[in-house]
Image (cartoon, rainbow, N blue to C red; front, side, top):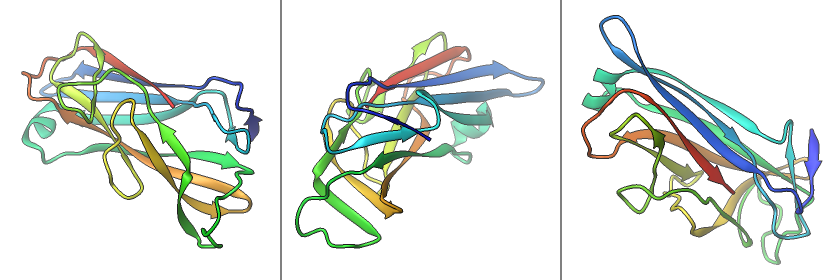
Length: 177
């Protein structure tokens, strides 16, 4: 893995596509992830400057009914972070000194990230390991798994209806952390 210093800007790009099929409209997408460390005591370790998460396919009828879920997990690896006092050597820790923020266009709800493109009626929701909603532009403490001198931040991306009528088409969401 390559280490990226705090000077590198990393961008999260989520490319989600709504495409038609025989008998059902499908949702298909992927996310490209990257980020920036603001504290000099940490570095981000990514295989590539842009990290991609494939969102897969889902029938639009399942999306409408709520029976299908389109979620994907992803991780952000932080190397050599100095932990604040009192954390100890737990396998999992919440360190208020290490914070993360995801920037993107806010959707209809404060926790929605709005997509751009022809598709309508969908939004992106991001949750941390504690299943707490990530709000665009808001800092939250990093919850991480410590392993081999590396902190692993775990997140889940979910595609959800935003309350507007669903229309098929291409769309994407860009997030920066």
